[in-house]
Length: 101
Image 1 (tube, helix red, strand yellow):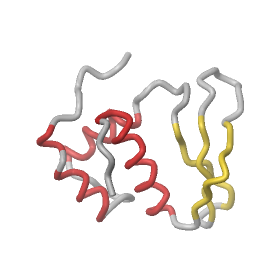
Image 2: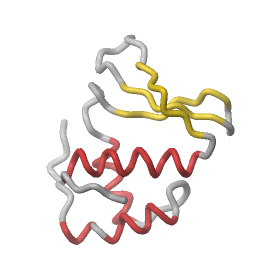
Image 3: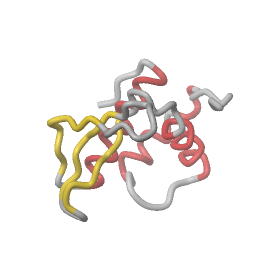
């Protein structure tokens, strides 16, 4: 069931919190935003796939059908914080139309 919560202008400060701490403990407000962004339908959802534990992650796209493999892209990360920040920016744009730099 999709969330009834929508990102509001007052959620913008959480962008900076995520930029500074993409991995780890987050404020209740950022957790609310992340829950929304992470809870979207799986079809077309961008996810991180571990290629080498603690070393390498690849951007993948979910097919949306259980049992169907994730489609791997060419986008590879060697830093988990960079990878999480990248996915956050993409999901934020999808939900708000706003590009984060």
